[in-house]
Image (cartoon, rainbow, N blue to C red; front, side, top):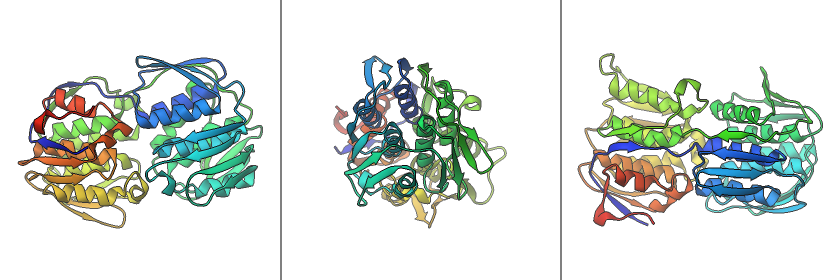
Amino acid sequence: MDITFLPSKLNGTVRIPSSKSVSHRALICAALAEGTSYVRDISISQDILATMDTLTELGASFETEGNVIKVSGISRPSEKAELRCCESGSTLRFIIPVACALGTFSTYHGKGRLPERPIDIYTRELSEKGITFDYHNTMPFTTSGKLKGGVFHIEGNVSSQFITGLLLALPLCEADSEIILTSPLQSEPYVNITIECMKAFGVKAERTPEGYRVKGGQKYSPADYTSEADFSQAAFFVTANSIGSSVTIENLPDPVHSAQGDKKIIEIAERLCYNKKAGVSGEYQINASDIPDLVPTLAVLCSLSGNTVRITNAERLKIKESDRLDTTARMISGIGGKIEKTDDGLIITPVPHFTGGTVDSFNDHRIAMAAAIAATAATGNVTVRGFESIRKSYPDFLNDYIKLGGKTENGITLE
């Protein structure tokens, strides 16, 4: 669906959906705990539904009432499972080692760009620990066998999702395990979320100088767990405020106590847009290694910050739902901004405002929402193609946007 946004400021109060990163992990931990768990304040999106569907195939069951999900954990793992991951990279990379640790013969299905996203770290490491892959660089593919513990050598600069997947699965193995990082870890806050969530369900993993250590033979315990609001989604409204809107975000966790890396948006917005007294002189640099999901909305914020900004260490964005370095640059250029791609990031030159134009979301939810926020500081309309892609992570975004005073041509909404 194509939606045209009219220039309009946002004003009012918004409640941010639960952290998708936290929710994926909490649902997996609950499913691995034999007994009944409750996961509260869950926001349902296509990615979360994909994780729930795969866990159901593996032997868990779910009952949803409002924003509370009752989880009946796996007591007897399925012998075979059809694991439909849709377009969720988190689902795929978290579930592969979990299904292998359960000993389930599994077939993995995916849509969009997911079949292109690499899993070679798993095919290399898990194949040495009792798992057989029938994999030909696309989907569907299968895994069979039962995962054994031991030492796993994992690159830290490809995706932290591989480390999270192993951390979730390795407590189920009989033997103790160690993850050795063969390159510096990027997106470490996401791994910290994993460890905190595991701890809430009675399972421990330990950070070591080389990587992580996980004792085997552990058991997940049922828990009553509340998922916190998502700084990744709040970033859109933080950005809107930074470029002229006035939105009160009512349910964000205290950044001091949150493990979410994307809480960094608060600091960046403060530094670039609000701390005028101190000011920013010269080129401002943002290291995106721990905050890759923020880059599309950061590009909007930085375009109107009055400073030239260089975003670095974002090369992994090339293998997201779209090539986000390319699609972010296309979005900003398409609405009158000035932006340049580099090998590992972006250089953004400030403009006084966006002029408006047409943006292709490339079926990427974060591009679509960032473009809608950019419309609040444009002199002309911004048309976003494929806006339904927001269902992947924040299905109510457009409803929230309109309730805050955002305007669309002919009052179009996303049904």
